Amino acid sequence: MTTRTIAQITEATDERVGPFRIKNALPTRSLKQVDPFLLIHHMQPYRVKPGEELRIPPHPHAGFEVVTYLLEGEFFHRDSKGHDQVARGGDINWMTSGAGIVHSEGPTAEFLQRGGNVELLQVWINLPSQKKNLPASFAHYSGNTLPVVEKGNTRIKVLIGSYDDQSSPVKTQTDMFWYHVNAKAGELVTIAMNNEFSSGLYMLSGEIKLLNQTVKAGQLADMEINGDQLIFSTTEDSSLIVFGGRPIREKVVSYGPFVMNSFEEVQQAIRDYEQGRMGYLEN
Image (cartoon, rainbow, N blue to C red; front, side, top):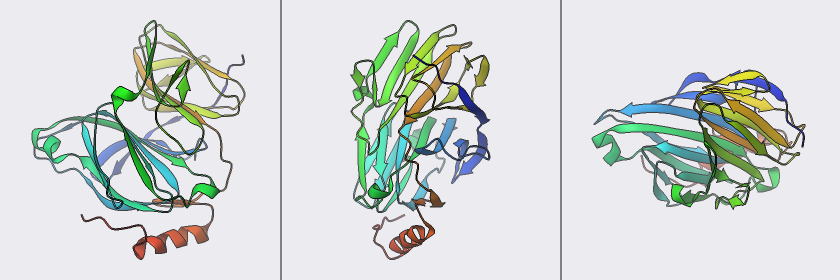
């Protein structure tokens, strides 16, 4: 087997999305995407005070998939197709925006009333041109349905795709994998992967050595497509996301919540939203 080398290591930037402060791991100034992954936002552990108002009002999406992995807390999802779902720690909400959908999200009213910690990852995954006009859809996956593989002091939760003989129930429009790895200090971790896939890792916490380079919390390592395995060692107790997928290799033209292949398609998506073709959702 051949071990992948590092293309670059980037630092997530501190940004604000609506009322939330997040780490923006992708895109950055030097790394626009890890095809097909377009965006990775990490809402770090945040203590919600009882009575605090935190929600993102209704807004549209079209042309890609939106994945929310809730690490802690309670988060609601409501959309213009009639879905109303609460995710709790360990759960995944998967929305294929396709031809267009309007949704709203945030901590549940009950959670805001009592307060508590919230942490999540939200990822945007591109759709190939032939799937950008799919009817919008939504699926929820409870954390207890996602398989876990334990090797020594390493625990790998299979969020998307397969690892060893364990497969996630999450259904995707393109080929990909996404693992949540928790490992104690001093572990050596090997992740096998398709040699045609792009890949990377994002550090939630801790520190690892990757080919003699250090990757710390809040950093993303983009890997070259030049091998069929990724190997790293943990210098601290670490939590990280290892991800990859089959590159789409198509032109990406984005404008806010719309991701298409041309400016004309973006303009059409804007018209579709303004004319109500993506549905309506009350604030």
